[in-house]
Length: 119
Image (tube, rainbow, N blue to C red):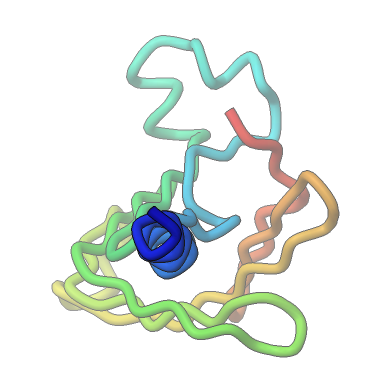
């Protein structure tokens, strides 16, 4: 019985980190009202991040690799498509995500999302 309890405890401990979701994963917006807005408003205002891709108001990236940094996360996004006609598609972009308590901020050269709240 003791051996079974120990096996269950070790299995639960080992599975815990695998089940944890990174704090940047989810849907984000500057205003929570946008979270329940019409689809066209959401496309223009929502930042959606999962474990391997992201969708931002001006573009989406099919692949994303997240790396922890001193101030947050650095995202190497690739296979990106967007509304900027000056960019040849697909393009890549390095994005910085910084968390401030319950908010996050997305930045890259020439862009700052401002503080975003989780939807």
